[in-house]
Length: 179
Image: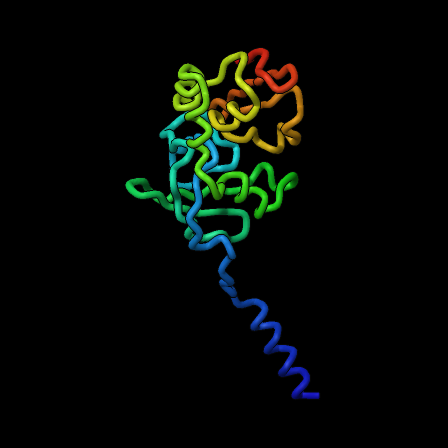
């Protein structure tokens, strides 16, 4: 019986110790799906539309995916950690990482767009007539807790911590932007 108790105690202690199992994403080279704003080295999945702009297509190396956070680095930029905080009930961490950091450079899509649309995307702006895909490149994914479906007729974004704005669609095109 003593051996059994000792064995159980050993498993409990081992279970309480932090095991740092690497994620399959760790070390992967990817591209930023869309424009991403940051003010601090740790940001939430809301992607407030203010602060320093890290442009879509930025090549990054994923340094760590742990729990609900992904950390990545890009040459010449500070490491950035994005936390899946608000959308954690709507998205798995794997889905979130695969949305944010993609395998192919999305800048290739820009070459086929009209000059005006390309300039709007590069400036992280949206106006009527843009497609859903162009809005995604420009503003990023709308926060999943406020816009759980990308087929919804309205996408809600956060301008900053206190103010939201809505992008209205008719079909696949932006009809208006309500600020």
